[in-house]
Image (cartoon, rainbow, N blue to C red; front, side, top):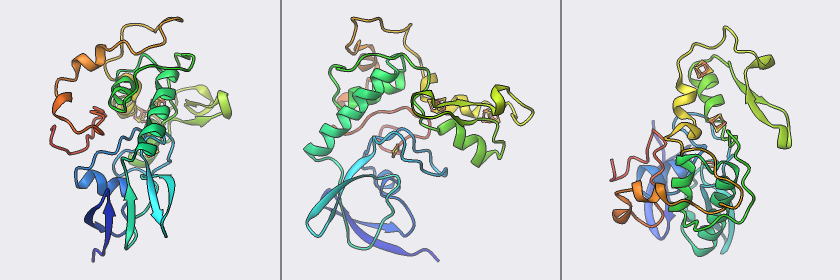
Amino acid sequence: MLQYVNMKIDGGDFRATKGSSVLDVAIEYGICIPHLCHVPNLSEIGACRLCIVEHVVNGRSKVTTSCTLLVKEGMVIRSNTEKIKKLRRNIAELLVAQAPNSRAIQDIAVRCGVKEVRYPFRNENCVLCGRCVRVCSELFGAKAIGFVGRGKDRRVEPPFGVLSDLCKHCGTCIDLCPMTFNPCEGYMKSGEEHLCGKCESQMLLADNLPESCVWCELGEGFQCSRY
Ligand code: SF4
Ligand code: SF4
Ligand code: FES
């Protein structure tokens, strides 16, 4: 039998299913908390940190990722304070610097209020969100790809660098990868360390969305009013 807890998010009272994460509850009630590495029904790895919130305990707040934070009776969460918006903007800015040609990441960054990118562009083809690795392992049981290496050498690869019989060629890893959504035309060059703005012009619903919505187009959606 389902058990419930009562909690507050941004001053509102919510009933949440025990065992669910704060991000799950926010999505269920249409509160937009930006997220990238979260995929419904897969494990959470807290990789992107875009989903940070303030968790208030005894009057003191702690910044934590909402996808890895399980709900508790009487929990108090602030998802959209000035502190969170500033931290989130910086995280989004770093993501753009890492992968400036990803349409999905540009969309997220614009919706998080990023106006310029102060970090050097790295033009990487992976932001290590782990969406592909988890769907392959947890949904299909294939384990055809995984993380290898550490630090700046960390990357996603098939075992021993060779695509094996383990792969079922389902294509789901590609469908879920934020690097594959309508990529921008070519890499940004050195000296173009700013957002091109093309993505924003394509976000036709942007004016009607709450400030915190990232219009992420990550496939599973927020189940919010834009769909
Ligand atoms: S295409 Fe292959 S590597 Fe990708 S999710 Fe499917 S089984 Fe895994
Ligand atoms: S390949 Fe794509 S889905 Fe996989 S970790 Fe990298 S960015 Fe994420
Ligand atoms: S969605 Fe929570 S850390 Fe990425």
